[in-house]
Length: 141
Image (tube, rainbow, N blue to C red; front, side, top):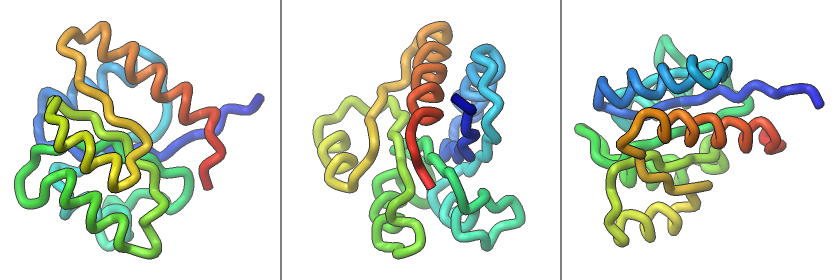
């Protein structure tokens, strides 16, 4: 089976978490392109192609934090799902929020998954590797 690359957009404002995702990608030998937006507004620009660092329009996956400045992850999801060109984009929440209301709202907005950020880096790396393997097998346009 030929491995299909996925264009991953990480929407995260915490520099340590961004660094951990990059390290986990390297350690797990994930060679998918990784794009980073520090808030929901920048992420929408990147997905819509209005930003100089636009994410390619095919085989996209968004890893999304909830608590961010300018536009929260849930506000981003609401906007994304209302945009005809973007509403089918798969989104996985990658957050520290264990609040039931956040989880329920995220699933109401059709997230593909809701993952709590593990504290231990080794566990975080395993989560990233498993997530990558899953999306390599998915048939997304």
